[in-house]
Image (cartoon, rainbow, N blue to C red):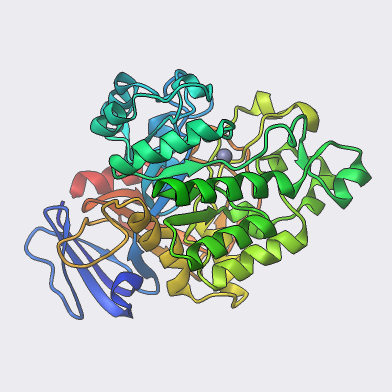
Length: 445
Ligand SMILES: [Zn+2]
């Protein structure tokens, strides 16, 4: 629980900090930041020379698949993927089997995360019983058991009256509703974005209008109820415009974008790789450009992964038949750094803000800051390093970046002062295999 991270470049947007400094963690909390800190006797040290030291990343949109779909992912493997990507907290979506629509399911997730998780896990409760969109779940019960937000993500809440009630209850419970915005009728049978490439490829597309219609509806419902709305995986010009307008009017609306929508377009779908099939689909370049603009001007609050593991057998089928979703926890920082920071679209501190500080604030979670007294959750990342994504910690490998090498490397991820991912080379225990080396280092600590 005690650790000194020395010689790094500390980048913490919550304190407007970007300078060489050491970070001392005591009893799981950040104790001190400053130059030349000495490790108290017996306290382990991470030498972060040449690396950035940032508050651990916080993902508001993760599908951990447990309970019920452990062939895709478990709380153990999903959180291992998270720390490998620099994440120290993930919010677990409700569309498990059974869905997280009742207290015992939430309690099971919380207990399993305590037992076998390697980062913080915050459950998200279902809006409707069985995700069926007919009847509200026991929202107060779910909140009491530890749910931090409510969502039927994976599908939209089609019934406007139900969405109204969800926003009203969530407001009383002090939690946001996360909306998967899609007009289910317009998107029926769609496997990609409706546009030039869907016509070219002869595949059924989902028009951008479907996302825009529901986003606008829910903003109207926020106005009606005074509830808090968080729009998941925003991907279209019109939906961005709707959120921008809502914010300018002071409504309680926040939103997120995913690394894949920021980095890729529907042009890539010509390869027919099922690792490019997700929902919302990859949109056209004009939509992607609008996302970049919205990131620059602050309309997009948060980058969230929508990490959605599927077993290789499920993805190894024709494009039309494959399930929607790609994994993202391990690649998110590297992808966003390349597309947003290396391209000079935004500054590094803004990226840390989008991936750590603002997600934590948006759902009122611990972390997202290195202020003394806050959670000792830290990521140490080498911006000049490289990671080859030949394999993944996730149980699934449905990533658009599988086999690619991207130019950053997570050196260490620390959760509550405990090193949960250690990517450092270890000369002291040379000759042993990496896992053995990791264990040997762990034993010394
Ligand atoms: Zn979704």
